[in-house]
Length: 102
Image (cartoon, rainbow, N blue to C red; front, side, top):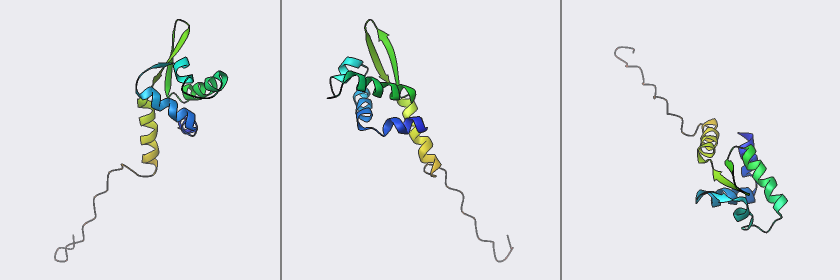
């Protein structure tokens, strides 16, 4: 989970994930959306791959990135559960019946 949160800590990587929500994109198409060097974008892609948030596939000379939304959802749910969010509420304990003592 720490790899996922490291990946999400950077605004550029979060924006890459937002762009990929619309569908797969090539590394070049993604890089064109940012005012950073290609090596910097490659480093961002590597962090996203290490966190297993994206899948990269070769298509000729291009690399196409796909969002792995299930991994992101799983990480966020795990994080929420670690704080007790989404946990089923326990049954309230009933007061003992004064007449029967139960």
